Length: 114
Image (tube, rainbow, N blue to C red; front, top):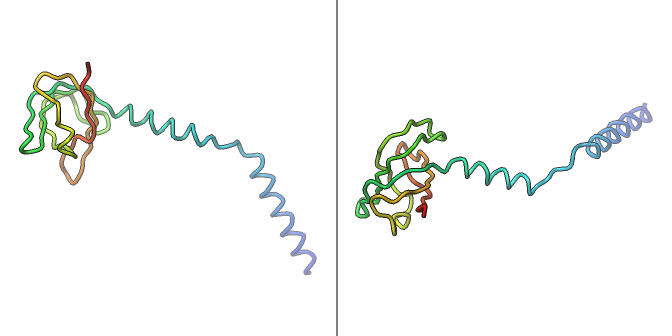
């Protein structure tokens, strides 16, 4: 009886090792590259309509925001970090990423397009 248990354990262990060795290798760098591609997808284009540094907000006329399931429109966003507003002025063309945080729409990244 003991011998049967040992043989079954060895067979299961050998099958697990064989399966692990036959699995496709994991490309860790490709995983991070995909994450970067996903982040790029979140970047939307827009135009700065107003900057309110005191309130920490920027009003953007933007195209569709696919990550928020939002159509093109003009709206005010809070800035996740007030420093994001540095250097922005009305009329600037921008790429930005907006997210929903605690029920508010927040710009978490923004850059001027030259």
